[in-house]
Image 1: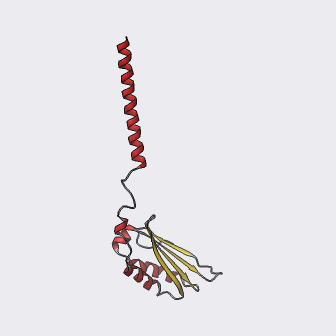
Image 2: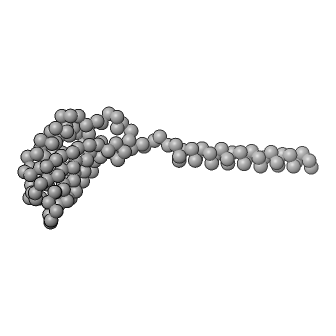
Image 3: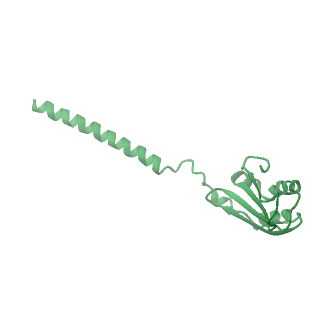
Length: 144
């Protein structure tokens, strides 16, 4: 009788230990998963000075440009362009030049980063601006 109790107790303990090990492994995989990290390879996708200057040149073809700032956001995989204008510009022209600006970046970077472009004006009573364009890495052009 005593032997049966010991065997029963040992079997229950083995099952409990197996369940605890399984729980620990599942939690570890959920909390510390390295698979499918969306930022993998970000160190291989840095903007070059040539890309930045080319994008600025294309944006400067618009009239009334006050400033252009370009940076990457490495946590969200975005190339962000801020364009400040001094006066209203025809928005259709802005869309065209923005889509032309896409070609300033390498195919490799375009396949990795999303693009965001912000147009704002110093004019306080503008009915057209601010405007924001967004281009997902696999799309052809900006959505406004």
